Length: 290
Ligand code: NDP
Image: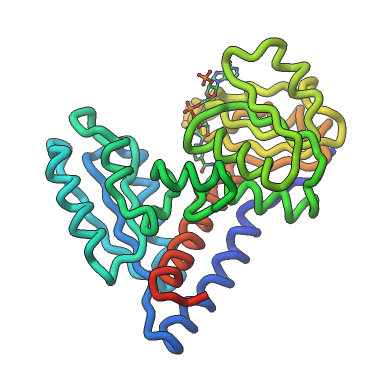
């Protein structure tokens, strides 16, 4: 049985450190880190995510300003709000909860955010900065996954890393971060040939696919470290209730892996903790504090 990587405990430790830093910033620098969270429409999952983020802000003493816009909001109206937030010196981070309703071009909205306030790290210039190793705001889920890997393994240099998934928000930035750590990185996706064989080469296996229990135990190299990014809601046969599962067949893979993140309680809490981390970093950057 492998070691469980406790993302919730790590996230709690990171948030405790950030809370102390926020106290110091307020006291010594008269700087009160602040994030604006924008939600358009009534998608229940998005509302839950926003609620969790705002709650974490409260716990850390980070100011949060919620902007809940109607589902019929036009792109122009949303862009106008972004401009207002870009120009507000008291707002250090701007997060637009995705997805946005179909009349709005999500990419246009994200790219309208001042890159220094883009605490999700999705702006095209932040993606480019990451690709060339000049990291500014780094996407929260890959950043949190990297922190867990470094905590577990220390120096990652020379390890074979396989990232399954090539999305702009998880797979690609995860691969870029692992490459920066001098891993030998393979990015796998839906067209990859013989995916099980590719996965079996991985010392570090990151699953970001969006298919419940997709990665099988016999795809995992014995002793490998497995990071399960997936968050999938499935109906529990026994209880009839929805529950969250990852992209990895956890119980079977845990028999083979050296260490593995659970779902829930693995990468998920790290995503929110890294949003807090990015918000504090953005506030310090904008105030010229090293
Ligand atoms: P996307 O749907 O954007 O990307 C999924 C990726 O998986 C694509 O690159 C796709 O390949 C690849 N894929 C799909 N089917 C297969 C297959 N059969 N074999 C190999 N690769 C395949 O998802 P995201 O990256 O946004 O999210 C991935 C998962 O992570 C989801 O479960 C999501 O809920 C979760 N997530 C969790 C977060 C957290 O906080 N823990 C945050 C963000 C996401 P192709 O490009 O070829 O189509």
